[in-house]
Image 1: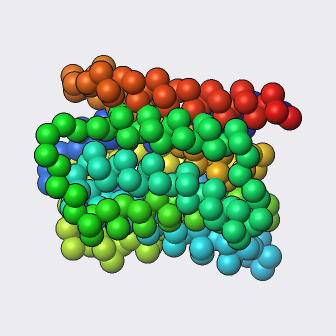
Image 2: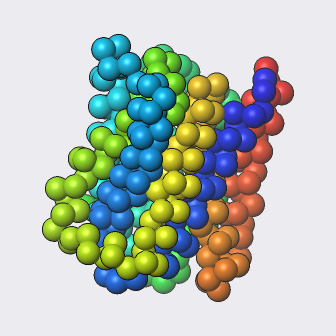
Length: 287
């Protein structure tokens, strides 16, 4: 069992994890949906220019069904996730969305594509989800908003659906054009929801450089790595590895933004690391 696909999926999650820290450089009151729209447009658009120039997209045989489903699911993921944060706050919204995604991925893979979850995946996912909960555990009285939780769960389900659908898309199309088309379509779908807040903030030079990084590195490169690894591993395993995203965000916040992590959060870091190790090494040994 080759470990390389696991490594590049892990690297993609680490790149996603840099977006939180990167967004602190944005100037002005900016809608998260607008950020998602511009990020998708830059990431997808740059790859689309490359793939069209290289004639990598064959329009007549292109797998439109899987492509459109992937674009809709990743657009809905971003919409549900950012909306949930408005009602639940960042900590709970992140835990429920990212933490539920591996469970939904395993269920979808089992029910729709008849791929039964392995014991290694169950153990590693349990470690990682508990770690994610501890990582963002907050003390005191916390009011749980039912609508926010429902939106967060919907976001987790949509990311799981995106991963499962993208695996089928990569079976019928090359990785580069698949990412290019998916995020170009995603940007188009997000425009009506992002338009209300306007895009004048993109006239600020700091915002241009920040969004360029988020588009090219945290979208183009990250999703090319993710889909590249997804070709060789199961959808459920890929989503479990994506839990390295909140881990990266927390560590960057602690070391570069001076954010405080309680001992429970550090325990969560250890458990997420343990889950990743069990999944990568355990799967390799079992085969």
